Image 1: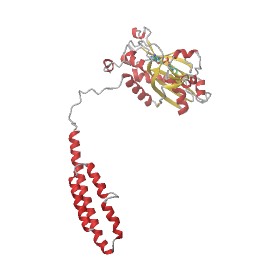
Image 2: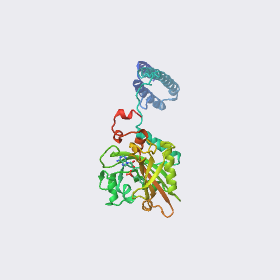
Image 3: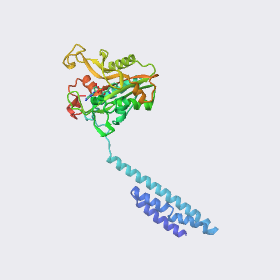
Image 4: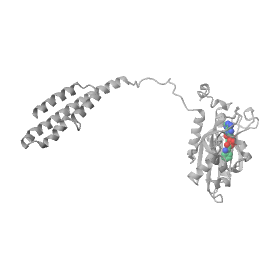
Length: 339
Ligand code: FA5
């Protein structure tokens, strides 16, 4: 047995000395220390030896085991260190390289504006709510008091995925969703992409962004609506901007309004940019219709609320004086690099 141990020491030390990569050393670890290794078989066989033999062989096996173990550990550390050095040389990073002139890209102006709007509303205590762009006919139309075959559907033609599934035409699709999911009291804004089946021109796209605001609680009035809109419009466009409401029809609000801001170019004095009216349209608004609250299982005798929906791309056009909305999705770097 002692001879066998001596042979094992020689072969193992030779093998380990020759190893020069981590895979080989891992294989040798299994070969010499694994469950089926020769050393493990010898250890198992010790029980069947006589007491005298045990006294001689036991310590010898243990000492060989410790010797080989420390030998293989040292070799392993040596190999890992040299492999790491090679890797570091190959993947060398120079932290002193000057990247000032590297082009790293930036957010699209509509996205920048969206994030700014989100920050403003968050600072006013609103939560940001997100909803699906592929929507059921129910949430996009029916829950909003627009039954099938109602003429109001003509105002927002869309793309049909299936009979009852559409690309959402407005972020108002989240009015009933947010009320059902978050309940009252609710102060939420929904920014996001919407779609319409309409011919594009300087102010119309088939794909654009809106931001919806929904507030439902006890005793909510038009005064709350006006102060909220006035607050956020001044934060976006500056303190001199005025707002005005005109009667407007949307089946999901009663009363409903179109909301205008004073022209940013002439300050309300009338110019070509505002078609000589002094005002620019921002979007629709109004007090949420009782039928909409009913769709969300909310008691309209106890709660009331307002909503508004504005076009982010149109706001972007006004803020940055962009004359044609079609630049927005053109993918033209001459446009986006200006912001
Ligand atoms: C709506 O979409 C209503 N959901 C708004 C609303 C919400 C009313 C809550 C009442 C209560 P409208 O179709 O007018 O309304 O669109 C709102 C705004 O989206 C418009 O004022 C405009 O800024 C923008 N918008 C509408 N159509 C387009 C289009 N094709 N391209 C670019 N922007 C558009």
